[in-house]
Image (cartoon, rainbow, N blue to C red; front, top):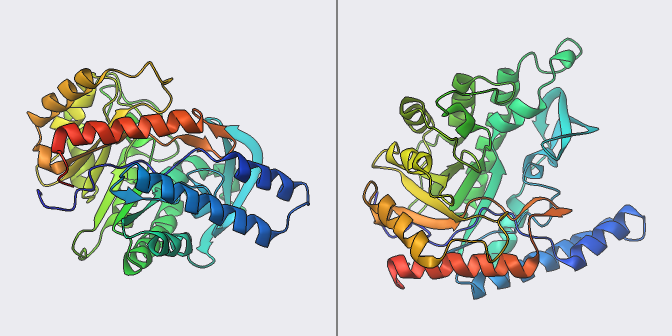
Amino acid sequence: MADTFNYRIDHHGSLVRPDSLRTARARAAAGELDADALREAERTAVEEAVALQRKLRCTVVTDGDLPREDFRSAVLDGVSGFRRTGRETDGLARWVAEAPPKAEGPLVADWADLLAQLTVIAPKVSLPSPAYLAATCFDPDLAGSGGPASARELGEALAGIVHAEIGLLLARGVRLVQLNNPLLLAHTAAEPGPAGALSFADALAVDAAAVRLDERPEGVRIGVCPGWAAPDTVDRARAERLYAEVPADRWVLPYDRGTGAELELLRALPEDRDACLGVVGPAVPVGKDPDIDTVLARVDAAAEVKDIEDMALAPSRGFADAAGRPLLGAEDQRRKLVLVETLARYCWGNEF
């Protein structure tokens, strides 16, 4: 696909929330701060995050998910039909679908507008994939009392909402949209285990419906991150099926452990798709990252199976699973992003 729109220096879209924003959220929860004041604190945090990304020479900018609780909230905050249960799944608040979902307006397009006002760097927006939400939010006990009849039905309704939001984002100038589905790579394992309430076939159909576009404006990429870590062993046929059935331009793949499975995921990627390699692990303490020569050797190995002009570099996942649970501190986050930028310049010089 080699062209000039590969957005070489990327990140997932989830950044560590600054202390000022966490304080504002705590005050709002205690009734000491009204909604307008909290919104202003969120806006200030986004402005500071954009300034940081500009200094780090990122080739795309995001709002860092700062206005939201976690990476799912881009949809859950703006769609009716979901109820928070108070329980947790994989460390995240548990939500269930108790009625067919319905969008109550634009989901994150207004925050994307702010990005366009703050910088000329290409705006990027990350969204949870509809298949991921369906797999984790479907409750069969609610199917007979107004809830969706199946996880597939829930996923299809969410796919329509996400598809419409992607269209709106592109119309407003967003150049890169990334869907996050941390469950997809589990389906590509040689011995796949349970991955939520959706089958592999249903997950592929749902996410495909969300990202399928009749045409793409020049420079636009629709990406999918299928998981934070590669399985121990990859079934090549299942990986090829993943790429074949979900018509995404860009695949954000874990590439921070140097395993054969990571390289196999890349080897299965069709020639006409971009790859964004997650070469730095946000959950790994600073100082424990592999040295630059080791990472560059891994990139060289990737370049033997994929045109380096169709690749980009990023961390392997976002820097915060949830607003109150960063994977590391803000300064260590900055150092990780500096490392990604340094690696990218070793690979491509200044030609971004």
